[in-house]
Amino acid sequence: MKIANLEGIVGIRPVIKSISFDKKDYIGICLADGRLLYAPLNLYPSISAMTPVQKEDYLITDGQIIIWEHCDEVFHLEQFLGREVDYAYSV
Image: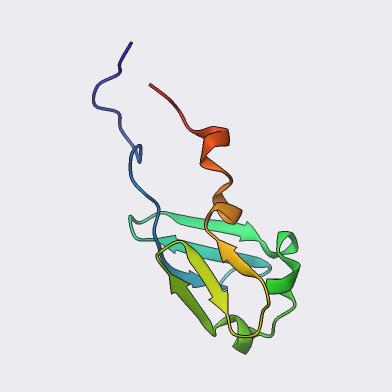
């Protein structure tokens, strides 16, 4: 059974537009389609360990990857959203 005209973000590839640390103890990830995701920093100790100035020194690559100058870890959007195959809805 195929469902026509699904509402929401089905079929939209998430693309990171920017990140922020405006909520205490959280990282905010703003996606190009307007979604805003907040994740607790305690899940990401290497980000949490950086100073506020170091946290602002990041680069977004391919809309999917965040790299910090002062962090050895490279973060993929999947680390914040979870693996799509684990939650994807199939019609």
